[in-house]
Image (cartoon, rainbow, N blue to C red; front, side, top):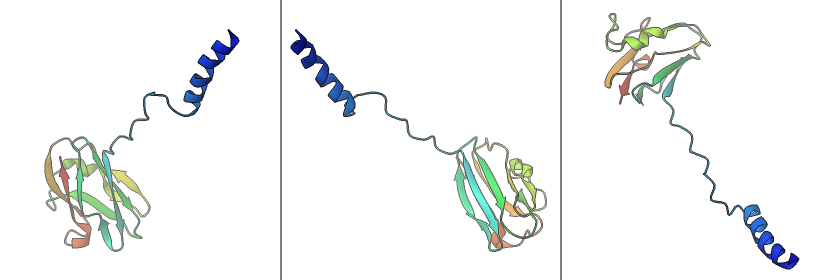
Length: 126
């Protein structure tokens, strides 16, 4: 009788120790709804980006001067009003847009340097 119990228990213990379980696998990490744009003395990077509807763009100022990031066109900033929440970025500061809920493409620029190509970019909201 003890031998019969051991024959039933030992394989079960071995299988569970070997990872033979069909338990739920760990789900993959969720796709990020944010994209980060880093501003340096060389400009903004990336300058072309895509975010899902409802996503946000985070701007980090790693330059030594102030930048003011807004949507195109300059000076109205009406393409993507969600960018207005970024505004003024002092050196080292990070700020983000509000949720980008409408599928469209819109440009962004540094309001203080609107003609500086390296500080301009395009966001596609899908």
